[in-house]
Amino acid sequence: MTENQTWVTEFILLGFPLSLRIQMLLSRLFSLLYVFTLLGNGAILGLIWLDSRLHTPMYFFLSHLAIIDISYASNNVPKMLTNLGLNKRKTISFVPCTMQTFLYMAFAHTECLILVMMSYDRYMAICHPLQYSVIMRWGVCTVLAVTSWACGSLLALVHVVLILRLPFCGPHEINHFFCEILSVLKLACADTWLNQVVIFAASVFILVGPLCLVLVSYSRILAAILRIQSGEGRRKAFSTCSSHLCVVGLFFGSAIVMYMAPKSCHPEEQQKVLSLFYSLFNPMLNPLIYSLRNAEVKGALKRVLWKQRSK
Image 1 (cartoon, rainbow, N blue to C red):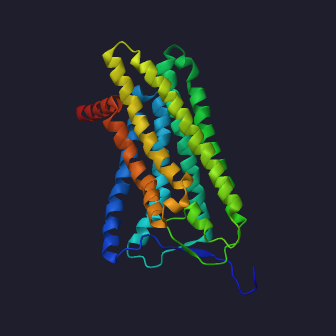
Image 2: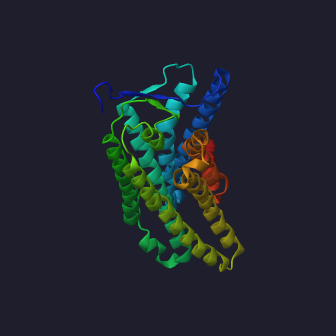
Image 3: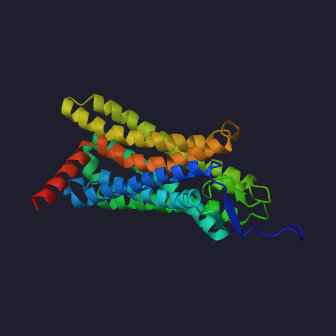
């Protein structure tokens, strides 16, 4: 770095290049969606906590998914809402920006692994029902959940360490609404080849690998469901599995397009929309999918409401 260059201590988040009126409208809309995200996932957590019939491995992992969705949205959305509002100083310091990148990657990686654990749980419940209670005991479920969180956080830490080794000497404008890792790397004053390689390798490990495991699990689940004689049994199995497949498709689909498709296919503004999709819309849609398409969750909601009415 030459003598007349200075280190960047803060960044400017450019966000969405829209008129003030449109930004205010988006701010109100996204605020409403964010509230729905908190309420929906909070309701899922509350139902699992209050209804003993949901104290099963499937809903244990679903509670972790709800926690991730709340944390995921809360890491990205509040800063975006502040910048969409009347705040004209759309800056973020280097350390908070780095922390936002770390949390964003940690929650994303952990959600990938939790979704795999949920598919494994469904595979064991439907394909090996006699061994299910032995294999998916609470100690095993806890280890699987802790391992998912630990691996997700460790992978995110690797990304952040590689970012911290880079010099940032200007420009300091991030063309995004939060400190998304690819947008941050564009501002580095050094070669980011190693970072790009690690991101692609992590995407293969955390996206393609888990997605293949999920698809293999559900191909066997589908074959097992088709062998079920009872129509009610098939309906119940399809109900729980279709909910999970919808969530898997939304999350993995948007993430693979974002991080594994050629960058020339997706302009920066389109990447912002994709990021918005799995930063805000996915966390909001997940509780809706599990509540509308899952008979057990709807039944739990009715029981909880009936208890409150009786009191």
